[in-house]
Image (tube, rainbow, N blue to C red; front, side):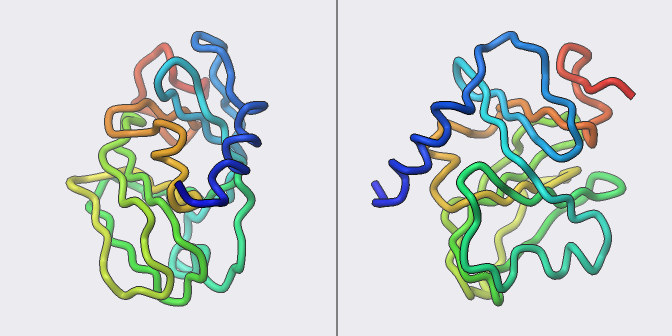
Length: 159
């Protein structure tokens, strides 16, 4: 286990909600239903070409409970690289219903190796590298955020 992951996990002890609680539907937060509970992250939204091109480049750190959500107008294949990105990231590819489609774990800082979704996705969430595995986040988990208008009724944010 990476030495910084215990600190991440300690932060998330206070952020883990009981299963079945009302979904978080704040545009500045995203909730992931993983295992018996949920994980909530404060997020920045990258929804225009300039923000999406810059992403998390040139940042020396990312808070443990933070991330960046790249939202697309319509589902499409997503391809990311780590050029000028200083920290390892997990890239969580999310389909139009808010389901985790796949995860590129612990991507290498400054790498030009492309990490791609396995199919069409509506969004990509970037969080600290190794955190998705540490928190038990995986393919098939449900993500709750207003961007996922096609999510199942029980987890869809109101319009």
